Length: 194
Image (cartoon, rainbow, N blue to C red; front, top):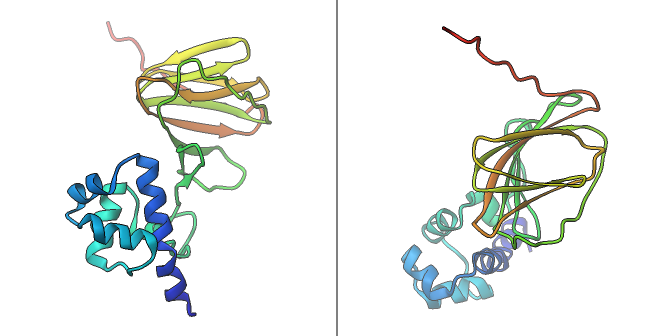
């Protein structure tokens, strides 16, 4: 079996995983893509190989690139072609920088979660600055349980036990800048004009 065959054979399970992650039926996906439910079922089961005409609407509906959908190997400069990291809990981490030794920037998208979810606090070396873009971010920082909304930011030493989560109100998107210990984000305010 050559590389293109192996790549195409792996598309079915990936399609099924993406659909189940979105918690939609084949009928709902058929309505969104214009591809019949029976064809989608055969694609997911690996009984039919996808065409480009099928992959394009599926990638659009699932919010992934064609490369991600077919599991294409990374190409080009990884500092330019940064790929999202999908976690088992449905969260997505998008690296925005890959500069060694400096502040690293990430965009996080976390799925909605129960408001009383037990946090799994972590610690590590560094300093973190977070800024909420959309949704509501629950930040547990030591003994503090903070709720941040769009436009709000927090910065902290990552040796303090911390955890990020969304709330039941929906998913949350936020930026995170992580630097070495003592390397902090600097905020400059415009001078007050009378």
